[in-house]
Length: 288
DNA sequence: ACCTCGACCTGCAAGC
DNA sequence: TGCTTGCAGGTCGAGG
Image (cartoon, rainbow, N blue to C red; front, side, top):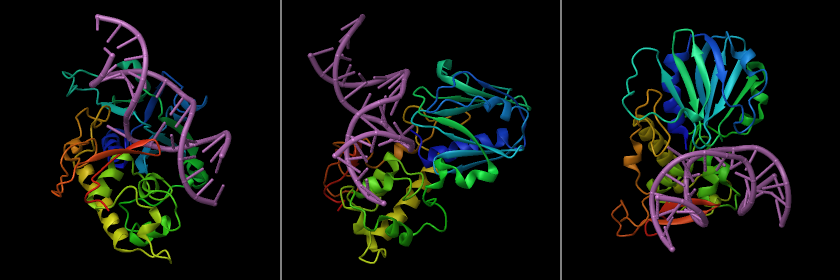
């Protein structure tokens, strides 16, 4: 479910509730996430103060005063809910089943932070800050697309020589961090590039960027900025930490719009195809 | 080394 | 009404 904009939205919701606050107790109700939560998990977290809540790609990075770092991934259906211990702002709304509340952080300020994940593709892992650069989950990840260092030259270099489709390349977290199925489709539409195009065609023979690479980088940055501004996209599971919904799903141009007229006004029709086992939505008429 | 595909899970909507 | 099927925002690891 969650791609970079959703994870960033979650991070912004968690930060004010957790930063500078001690975890009195972490309660693990179900250890069976993507990998089993380690046996020493609670012992290493209980009593520690959260020093920062960050993000790398689709990972949430929670620094603790002990020097440990909690690395968390939301998988396809993970979400966090902050209850500040006072008024349940959205408590009149039908609240999601507590069946899948797998981990609850009881904070020293009275707040609770609950991780819910029906499909359990999410993960939680403790690593030490000193060895974070050796962490296999993070070490191969490509540039942050919203960072200054991410530009057409970088993207073209990463795609040069790739035989796979441009769609598949953009989904590869080693090429660029944080994109998923929705935002790849949206960025490719905005750049008017076909998802079926060979990835290497955004670079010249020397791996230098061409006009397609420049347009694509602009499109990626723009769609991510727009989505973050909207609080991410809420299709099934994603919510802001306060329970409110993201809005960006209303701004999808092609994703899940099979059969609709091309929103670019080209008289084409949005088509759904399957690439690498995943749905791709695009306009064959104007995405070349 | 690159690339594709199955596997991991639950829930929901559509079709019969 | 129930059953079956397919699909879902991710990614790791096996196999070609």
